[in-house]
Structures are given as structure tokens and as C-alpha cells.
Amino acid sequence: MIEESTICAISTPPGNGAIAIVRLSGKDALTITDKVFSSRKESISLVEQEANTIHYGTLSDGTEIIDEVLVSIFKSPHSYTGEDLVEISCHGSEYIQQRILQLLIKNGAQHAGPGEFTMRAFLNGKMDLSQAEAVADLIASDAKGSHQLAIRQMRGGFSREIAGLREKLLHFISMIELELDFGEEDVEFADRTELVLLLDEIKELTQSLIDSFQKGNVIKNGVPVAITGKPNVGKSTLLNYLLNEDKAIVSHIAGTTRDVIEDVLTIDEFRFRLIDTAGLRKTKDTIETLGIEKTYEKIDKAYVILYLIDANQPIAEINRLIGKIKKRMDKTDKKLVVLLNKVDFLTEKELAERKLKKNFPQLDKRDHLLCISAKNKYNLKTLYELLPKIIRENGASQPDVIVSNTRHFEALSKAKEALDRAVTGLDTGMSSDFLAQDIREVLHYLGEITGQITNDEVLGNIFKNFCIGK
Image 1 (tube, rainbow, N blue to C red):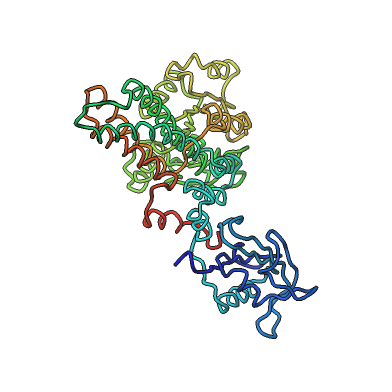
Image 2 (cartoon, helix red, strand yellow):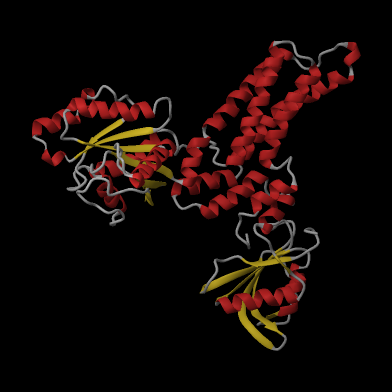
């Protein structure tokens, strides 16, 4: 059983390094370490040492010294897992790490499964489930934005929001349940007017969290940016500039890019997933047609669209092309940046005309317009600075509670559906037993987020994606 066994694992990345950490957790963590550890100063028992202390010595397998190590002691309940926990800092040889792991298993420990240390922290009440998931997000964070989002969630910001919603409902559900006990007397303990106001407030908060998912997902997984336009308009040249490498083939021959090319770029606190797509045109080429189909798929999934247009065309034609992409983006929350490329061939008058947004009535206030030359790097620095600005404009960098986890989003959506039914029921005079059922559902789904209500299958799916040793 998880409560009885003592687990061990290497907690640092695989391979050789300067140092590595091997971790044990469980009721026998100190006893097992005692069997193989000898202090360099004097004979000591780790079990008898104070918590939060570090001890220098050697680990040995019988008479064979494996390594000189530092042993850090943490005692229950004041440890990461809530159990007795030992961290052995050793030299980073992969051979040494494996020998220590084998030595601990030989003396009674079991090899930990993925995320088992954090699962024990959750089961022992050291963190709730949403905070445990944030640990994995923190480890995976590769930009300031995703790091800050994970830190806020791990420190309980999202949990407090959910706990607040549940607490407000618990009082009323208890009053309604009491009404059911006195059903024959036809009494009301829960003030229906006050309940309507409360449900409306919770609906608003829940909807706000649901709406934040797109922003949270963007910060966590990277902002998908589709670079699109007609063939030979400079898409691959622009991609190569932004990535500062020759990632895509650049040619004067139209239709060179037939498949989707993706790479990652970090600007300020945000991570952008740049997607160079096949040029949009009618073609009989089967392979190019497949590439164009993929282009439309990527446009539909992108958060930011960089739409390149040859600036040397008449303004009327440019407006027609803008209208085409706007039609595809109709009623979406995508951000459009129209890039009028190849402006180095324009006269000063033509360039001045194309810089004026008012000349392109298809664009609205949310859209951006830039005149550039991808080949000569004209105005590309402005584009580079514009990308994080677009994300900030839409509130993604604000320190509010933001949902970034699909499981949380689904639970909130189901809670919102139950809330809608409860509000409708109150308006139509629904009986207390049906009303109580809807409110219980809201509490259930909110409880699923923090782990107050869970099952082994859910836990297994969450922790299987963790690192072993965390």
C-alpha cells in the first residue's frame, strides 16, 4: 500500500552531471538510509537527528564505498510529501546514481512511479489536486509567462477562487437539504431571493474562469502564430528572420512551401509557436492542395495570424484580400496582423498610402497593419515587438486567476451547465429536491478541480505524465 511502502527515485535529469539527487519518502526512509550511510565525523543515527539538517558522509554497499554524499533529512509532517523524506546529493555519474538506487531498493525501498512523490503530497494534504498539477506545469514551463502562471496556481491562487465558490454554495445546499427533511411542513429555510443573487454571482465568476482558458492555454503551451498569404509573398523569408536561421527554403518559384513548418520563438515572457504555411491559391497539384488544406487548419487553430500581402498591388486588391481572411476569421477571437510586404519597390507616396489604416476599411480596431520588407528587414523589429504587445493587450499577462488546464476547463463548463439549470429552476419554481440536485452537481464539479472529489482513474491519468522522482 502507498501508505506503508518507502519509495525512491532519481530526481535529477538522466545522464552525467556535476551532482545528482536521489530521493526517498516513506516511514522507513531514515532507517533504510541509515543502513548504508556513514558520517565522516562520528557514528550517528539519522533517525535520531533533527529535521531539516544535512549530514556529510559516505554511502557503502558492505565494504565497498559507492560515493561521498550529503544527506538532507525532512521529517513528517513537515516535508514535501508529508512523510519522512531523505534527499541524497551525490556526484552526477550515471553509474553512481544507479548504484545508489539499487542499494536503496536492496535495503527495502521500492522504485517510485511517475509523480508518486507529488501524489503522496496530495494524499497527505500538503497540496490540493490543482496545485499538484501546477507542479508539473512549473517543471515544463519554458518562458516567463508559463512560469508565472504555474507559480500562481501552485501557490493556491486558483484553489482559493474555487474554494470561495464552493463555500458560498455549501450554506445554501445545507438549508435546502434541511427543507427536504421537513417536506411535509412546506417550509423554506433558504432565502430564494438571496440564492438567485448568489447563483448569478457564481455564474459570472465561473464564466470568467471559463473565458480565461484560451488565454491560459496560450500562455502555457505557446501562442500559435500562423504565417499565411498567397505563394511567393515572403512568408518563409519572414519565418527565417524571426527564428534567425534558414529554417524554410526561400525561392522565387511559387509553391515552394508545400507542408507546414513549425518552430518556437520566445519574446519577453511569451513563447510563440511560429507556423509557416503553404501559399493560398487554386492549384491542380495534389501535394500542394494537401498543403493548402493544412494551411486552413492551422489558420483555424492559430491565435495570431500574420497575413502577408504583396504591397505592390492596388489598394483595392489589397482590401479584397483582407476581406477574404476577415471572412474566415468572422466571429472568432483571433488577432490579425496584416503585413504589406515588399514595400522597397514602392514610391514614397505609395508607401505613405499603405501605412494609413483608414485606407483599408476591412480592418477594425483590433487588427494591426504594418508595412515591411522581409528581404531587407525593413520594419521587422517593429513586428518582433508587436507580437508580445498583442498578447498583453488581451490581458494574458495580468496577475488574475487564469485557467490553463483542460481538466479544469471541462469541470467548470459542467458546473456552469448545472448552475444554468438551477437558475432556470428557481425562475420556474422548481421543487427543492431538483434544485438541491443541481447545486450538488455544481459542488461536485468544483470539488473535482481541487481533488475534494476524485477517483483512482483521474489520479492515474494526472500523475502518469509527471517525471519519476517528482
